[in-house]
Image (cartoon, rainbow, N blue to C red; front, side, top):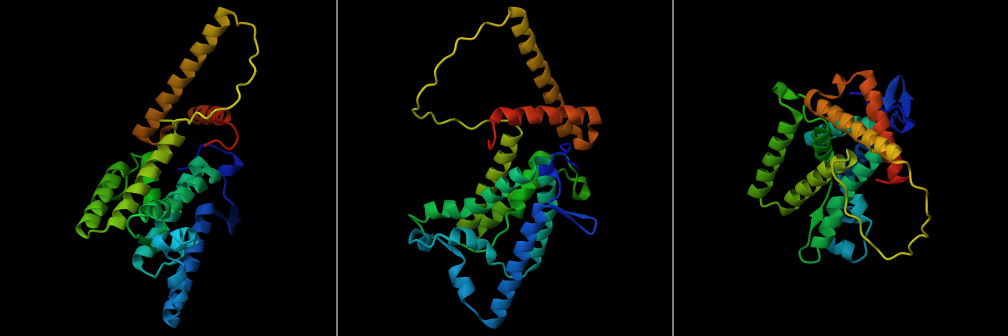
Length: 281
């Protein structure tokens, strides 16, 4: 599933022996190195790694703010860790191809920091602890929101698989009375889904109106009525065409678009990004 955008931000970071290397691969590399160090310190009986890196709300509130970032470095070796890394590479790479490197990294940074920041707030009333975690499952949710009709095992669509897995993980957390796992699950799943929908333009965030000096108004000549009506009708036609293309992607997948339709969708996305301005999310 190649992204129709051909800008440099959607291209690989580098090529290694003919293989495309994306930012998602470097994230996985960092986790693998952390897992090897965790294994080494476990074997040597070194406890400092496990005392100073995990997230503890009480410690963060006392000033040990590095724990908000370092908690993900504590990853003992396991089969689930391997599965998470495969998910992170696969789904992270596809999201990076579609949205571009900068938007993907904003998504991943939000998924990584959201649980400890939320638990810090909750920690004012109840101590919270967190160690390890890659955010790979939330990336799958983002992928399912972007490509809901992609078929997985036994031809199960991505959207149905996402519903099933979220439901199962929720039941597991409830049966184990795992408040930390439940909050982390729903916070990251909600963020991933909302992030994708926002980038697709399905909704906008409310703006906070702060007092600021009003700019001076300039009187511009009125456009001829005929020109104004033409511009409005052209915008309406363009939006209707984009909506039709998005519906086609949702029903048949990105591969169903013709090269002309992909170019049209790419042009519309570029116009939206220009209106948001540089650095706009």
